[in-house]
Each structure stands twice: as C-alpha cells, then as structure tokens.
Length: 149
Image (cartoon, rainbow, N blue to C red; front, side, top):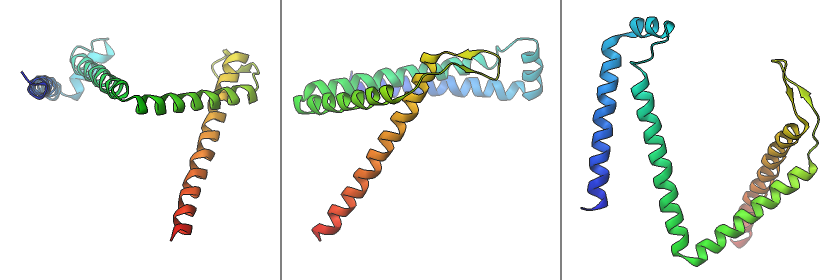
C-alpha cells in the first residue's frame, strides 16, 4: 500500500471524526455546553480538543521525520544546516553575555529570578540581533541587484 493511500485513509478518518464531534457540539447548543462547563463537565468539547492535539502531534512528527530524512540524505544540506544552527547558537550566546539578570517582582506577587530575567533579556536581544541581520541582508541583496543592472 502506498504512503499516499495511507495518508488519504487517515485524513478521511480524522475528517469524519472531526465532523462527528462538530455536529455533536452544534446539536448540543451553546447554552447546554456553558451550563455543563459551569458544573465542570467538558465531555462535549473534550473529544474535539483531543482530536486537535492528536492531529498537531502527528503533524509535528511527520514534519520532523521528513525534514530529518531530507537533511541526512544530502551531506551538503546537512553541512549548511549545521553551520546555520552553529551561527544561531553563537547569536544566543552573545545575547546571553550581553543580558543582565535582576530579580523582578511580578504582578501576581511572585518574583522572577535573576536567571529567568537574564533569559528573557537573552530572548529579546536575540530577536533584535536577528532582526538587524535580516534587514541588513535584505538591504544588501537589494543593493547588489541595483548595482548589477
């Protein structure tokens, strides 16, 4: 059996289940669902939510599987991916070194640790560095196209 046939069968099963759960929710009605939810009964909505989670995990697994299979099938792609990941780690390291960690009180009364604060700063600085790099590369690409003409 071909992989396309398996995918079609699994997609059809997921589609029928989703349609069944949706029709069940529509048939129950908003008021009944809200009333049941106030008493802690989420039995009408839970199957559709679980189905969505299953579809999400299947999508993630299939994406990772085919991505890794594609990377390991071509050494040039694997080398480029390794270099890109290495450069990304360097940007994160630079951001981490440049960030400060200060204990910060939060609105709910808890305290963000100095290490947590440093990682938040790292994320923000990483975003800024990658944004500047992306903008610089776009400008450089545009300029090189202009000067080639």
